[in-house]
Image 1: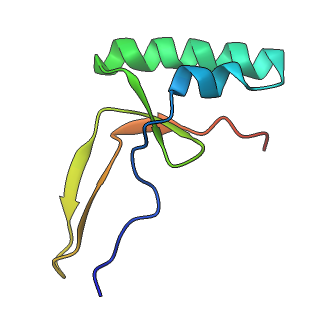
Image 2 (image 1 turned 30 degrees about the vertical axis):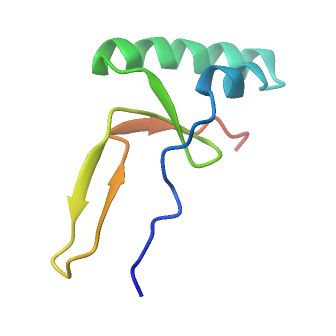
Amino acid sequence: MAYEAKTQATAVDATAYLDAIGDEQRRQDCKALVALMRKATGCPPVMWGPTIVGFDRYRYTYASGGSGESCIVGFAPRKG
């Protein structure tokens, strides 16, 4: 059985996701972080799974042969 990573890039709009954050300060902080990461990576934000805002992507392969894809840098604007 092939392994499939739970966290994958989705078609969800990252801006809409951030706009829906209820706490105003956290929403502003996330938008500032998006601007910083966009400038640093040169890439637009992409949702990875339901809560991770990621930038750029890379592929990896384990010695066992399993492989996958992930964002190079990202953050999860969760409460905790």
